[in-house]
Image 1 (cartoon, rainbow, N blue to C red):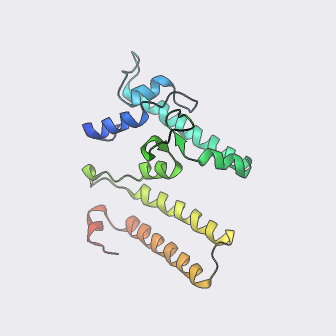
Image 2 (cartoon, rainbow, N blue to C red):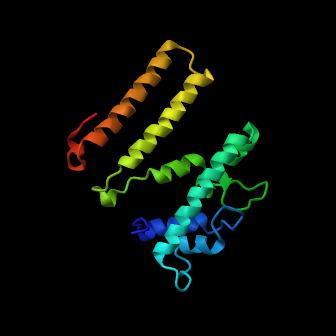
Image 3 (tube, one colour):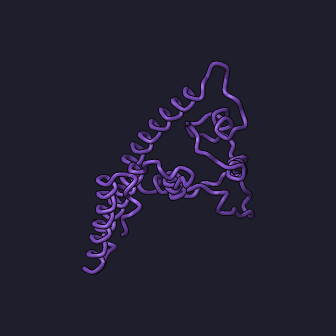
Length: 183
């Protein structure tokens, strides 16, 4: 299976969200964007598996490119990359709804979406991703100096310990036994 199981309503919302997003760069071609939204069939001879293989390979390369930009670019350049991105062109007087914007936090939320239709699926990789993201964020709060008191520092360490404990349990406890564990 290559696509999430999406209801007709979810597909409609995705289509509405991205329908005005015209190809303004990015790593997907216009045809790939249409195919992802279900608005275009694949080229003859291109299977769904081939399509997704190419998408994954290209996306992984784009993540490496983004990392390189963040390693080299100055603060202002990086800030512009991670600002909210409008999905359509707007005039100066027009304001956009939140659903017409894309941001890094929305990307993370899309990755971490809980698939309630497939509760038996192992989401350990998501737990590990959350731990790594939170660890990086907590390290930033410590090294940036924004934490002013020792109690704040202790709270950060407690959060870090909690996340480590949750991930540790996820790794050690079989999937079918995890629901019984209360935190």
